[in-house]
Each structure stands twice: as structure tokens, then as C-alpha cells.
Length: 278
Ligand code: SPV
Ligand code: MG
Image (cartoon, rainbow, N blue to C red; front, side, top):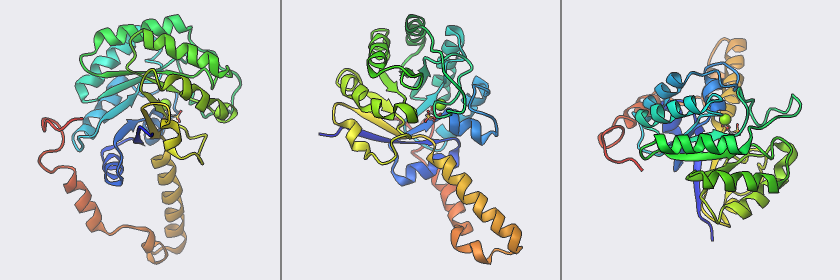
């Protein structure tokens, strides 16, 4: 049995439209996508109001569920509660917070040494405060235990604690060093609560394998930005060196595609007030 939902990481209305068109069931406003699109490191640099503006702009073109990455909640219960209210009001369906210390560094960024995590009781308190502040926004609690070098048991224990604090869904992240620990955590946790995963470090695993033990949303979290950087960089270099479009024209869509895409996002029955939200 497989109980899988497929999500794609996006950072803007146009990338949301492309993800929807490709069949995404969930849109993930990931911190890596959003901050890279703004040209800043994934280090909690974006202001909650800036993120809320991104949510609003995406909500205006799609009725798909929007899950927002709120990192550590800027390291305080008060600011995590502020983000909860702000993002719900902007049109998000779920907010994700993680048990890193502020300012968090991207989980896949292994250029630096060890990581400290927030005490699990303190993080459970943050989850409870967010649960109390939301209306119907879902709260996703994410542990970075595997990224910080702890065993699968420690990640499972933390996630159980966060579920007891009221989290609606649970997220375990792994880095390259701990990739093989991810499935054992999913095996324990997915039967208890819906899970959310962004398994970039397991690129060869069919997403259905994660949903063998319970409902799982698998996010392809940074594929849009990595594809954008790879394609755009190649095309632009070629245009600059040949000073014409001939050799890149097969890699470009026609301008009609842009007209069509932007009209597609504004059709009646989509966007705010349509009543079509998941
Ligand atoms: C993100 O997309 O910002 C995430 C997922 O948090 S990852 O970067 O893969 O940890
Ligand atoms: Mg992130």
C-alpha cells in the first residue's frame, strides 16, 4: 500500500504554476528556494512579512495546498506565533518549524562542523504555542536530529514529543551522512502521524517507498531552483558568446507559452475567494 502525496518546492507564482501543471499536489515554499531566489543565504534572512508576501502572490494563482517553511520560527516562541498568524492570514495551509538553533543553516550544507539542536522540551513548547495561535493552519514539526549526527532513535523520540505537543504532521530531515537513517525513522513515525519529507539525499529512491508505512508527503524541495540555475546559466553563457539566439532557441519556450501560463493562473475558480482550497 502506498499513501503518497507529491510536493514541489517553489518560490514564486510562475514556479507554482509550473509545479501545478506538472502534477504537484502540494506546493512547498522552501526556505532554500525562497532565499536563493532573493539572492541571500538560507539562514533566516528573509523577514516574515517578505515570506507572507510570497505566500499571497502564490495563493493568487493557485488553489493547491501551500506548505511554508518557517525554519526555527526565528528562534523564539513569540516570533513563531507571529509567523503562524501571518502565514495563515496570507493563505498558507501548513507551516513547518524545525528544532535547529537560530539562525539555522541549510541541512544539506555540510561545509561547516557540528550542529546544536534546541532542547526538545523547549521546541515542544514552541509547537504548543503555535497550535494555540492557529485557526485551521496545520503545524508541521521538523527534527534535525539526524542532520546533527544523532541516531534514528533520537529523531523518533523527538518527533513523538512534538506529536504530543499537538503537531499535525512530522518531518525528519537527513543529510548525506545520515541518509540511511531516514527510512527507519519513517517506519516508526508514519503509522502515528502524517509525515513530510524532503529526501534530496536519497535521489535514487522512488517516493512511493517512503509511503509504505503511512501517509507521507514527499517534497522535491530544491529541484526548481537547481534546474533554473543549471539551464539559465548554460543558455545565457551561450547567448553572450555567440551574440545570437540560434544555438539556444531549441532550449527556449516560445513567448506564446508565457502568455498562456500567466492567463492560466488567473482563470475564474482559482486563487483567493474561489472556495477551491484543499
Ligand atoms: C528547504 O527546502 O528549504 C528545506 C528542505 O528545508 S532542505 O533544504 O532539503 O533541507
Ligand atoms: Mg528550509
